[in-house]
Length: 125
Image (cartoon, rainbow, N blue to C red; front, side, top):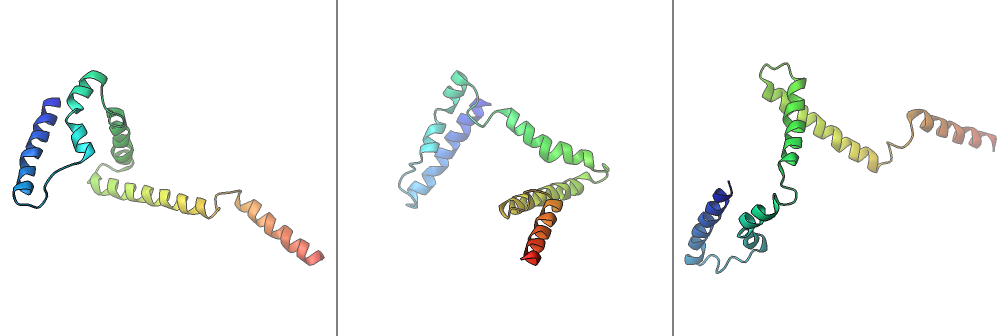
């Protein structure tokens, strides 16, 4: 797997020569690209880079694939899973919107009681 990383990087640098010879770009000076030269050695010395361990991808897989699959009827499940994920994304976006508007503070009952209290105070004055 790490050898594949080195091969892919070497292939990328070979293809970059096309851009240099045609004059599209004179040099590739990208810090992250340079850092990739050291990935193999650093992974061998210290393990997986930050935020790239398999537990994160596994947790994303569980959230995006396994749990939605369990909610389907297993017949043509992909369409159902996509719809489930779309609904969950919309719910998450709604939650952010409602939170920014202060709609998640208190309860419906507390909002009604607050308004009733203001109406009663207004009527007594």
